[in-house]
Image 1 (tube, one colour):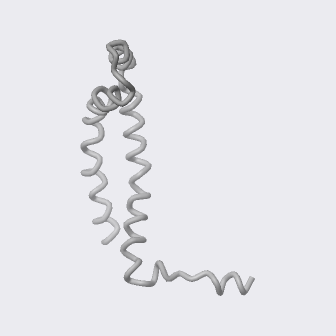
Image 2 (cartoon, one colour):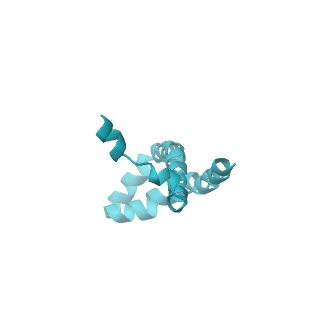
Image 3 (cartoon, helix red, strand yellow):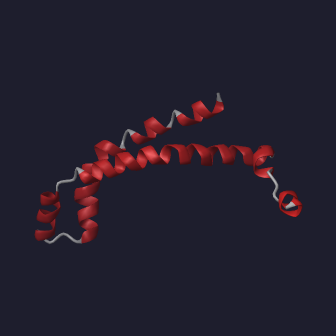
Length: 93
């Protein structure tokens, strides 16, 4: 077990060049659960009748996503950067 502990180094925590990236990854990981919950809730709120009507009108899958689903998700996705922008402030204090 001594060889394992000696070979494992914590340079990514101690080294100032890497510590900012470590904090950034931790902040992204911390906010990703909240963002995914909001995204999934908004996706469940998309009315299937609207998507079905777009498909009946001849829209391709890409057109349905870009012209129907994403505009319906926009009100839920726009505030996410605002909510997650407080995380770097919380990490640095």
